[in-house]
Image (cartoon, rainbow, N blue to C red; front, side, top):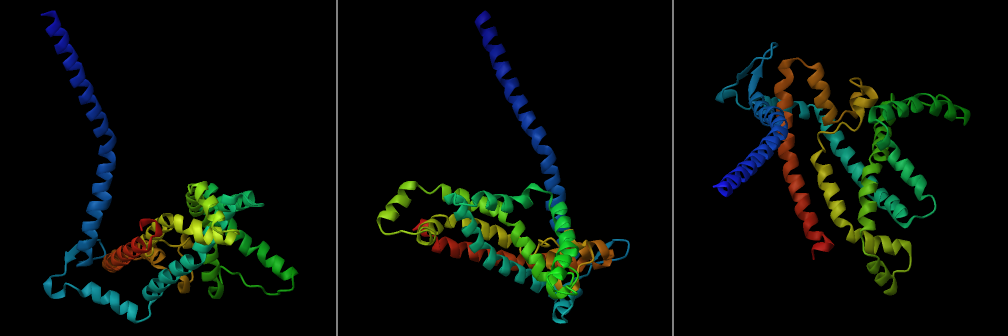
Length: 315
C-alpha cells in the first residue's frame, strides 16, 4: 500500500513538473504570438483591404466595389508613368542595390581576406569596418553629417577648392555620398561573416592547393576561398534582395523628412508618405507594398535557384 502511495506521489510530481514546463513555455510564447498576430497577420490583411478601398480624412475605409476594384492600382502606375516622386524612388532603390552589390561584395572579400590572413594592418581594417557597428547608427550618421558639413568643406577650401559644395545638400552629389556611407556601414557584419567562413576552410585544403600550384594570395582567394565560401555569399545576397524596396539607405538619419527628392528611395518614400500624408493616401502606399512584394518574390526565388545551381560546393 505504501509503495503504491509513493508511486502515485511520484507520478503526480512528474505530471505537475510537465504541466509547469508547458505553462512556462506558453507564458514565454504568448506575448510574441500576440504581437505576431497583431502586427503581421492583421497588418498584412488590413493593408490588402486598404489597397482595394477608399479612405476618408477620418481614416474610415470603404471597399471600392467590383466596378472600381483596381482604381488604386491605376493611380499607382499613373504616378510612375508621369515621372513623379514614386517613379524616382523606385528607380533609386534598384540603383542603390545594384551599386551596393557590385561595389560592396568585392570589397567584402578583399577586406575579409586581409583579416583572415592576419596581414599587416588587419587590426586597423577590423576597427574601421566594425566602428559603425559599435556606435548607434543614428549617432554615427550625425557625426558623419557634421564632418561633411564642416571640416570637409574647410579642408577642401584650404586645398584650393573654393566654394566646395555641401555634399549632402547638393543633389548632384548627395546620392553618391549616401551610397558611400552605406557601403562603409555595411562592412562590419558582412566582413565578419566572410572572415568566419574563410576561417572555417580546412588548412589541409589550403596546403593541398599550394602543393598543386596555388602560389600567391590572388590565386588562393579567387580559386580556393571564394568558391568554398560561396554559401555565405549566397545567403547574404538573398537576404539583401528581400530588403531592396524596404530599406531607406540611411536617408532618415541624414535628412529626417527633408531629403532632396532626387535621392528618394522606396523605403524612404513609404516612411515619409505615411508620416506626412493624410489617411486618404494610405491606399496608394498599400498598393505599393503589395506590388513590390509581388515583384520581389520571383526575384528572390529566382536568384536563390540560380545560386543553388552554380554553387560549387553543391556539386
